[in-house]
Length: 262
Image (cartoon, rainbow, N blue to C red; front, side, top):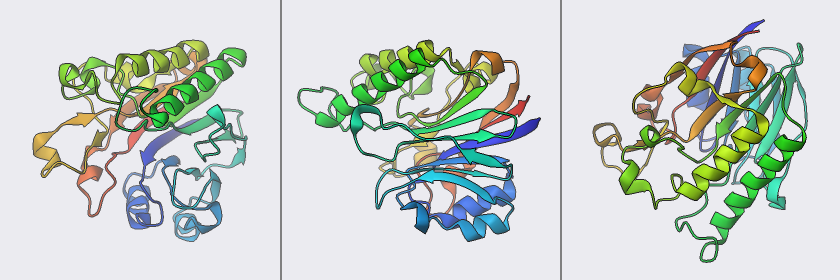
């Protein structure tokens, strides 16, 4: 079985329905995982996606915030969700392909602006969410599984535009990187993107605050594709579609792709 998967924080699926359709038409991934859909499930614009061949969807949503969805041209079934740290947020959904491959789609909390859980409740929630992920994968080690999404952490020094300047900035602090590393270790996960692109600066997010995001290029790799140990030799052709960050009224994230031969 062969398929291509993409993950994209769309920052409102209803507002950016046309961009999703453009990606589906131009790039034609078999599976597209979306985060920050900001929509109840029943209001996700599925008709247009179905017309493009994406007739299957599993999703969790809420009005105006969070939300995750998996669109697919291949048959998928709902494989549940988890509410780590008991936040009551729509941040995780899983789908299972007919061959048994499990796909986890995550939107990890951003964590606010101050990297101190005593001063910033959101930062504590982020760390607690990651701890919940760690414990779950440690207790139920994944097999034949893919984990994707906006994990809101850029773990490597070359995953950010300036390691030194971002060490105290939420998304690249040592405590966040350690927590993400613990999730990866607990589940035996492999970073598919960096396995394919092991060297060099690599980003999937550029702030809206930059006057010219492309020229400034102050990016971070917040969006990830991980695979379980048994699939690490089945994944290839990873890439980030940087051009999508420059589309009309874009998300601040770019889609991340990977292909699989199972």
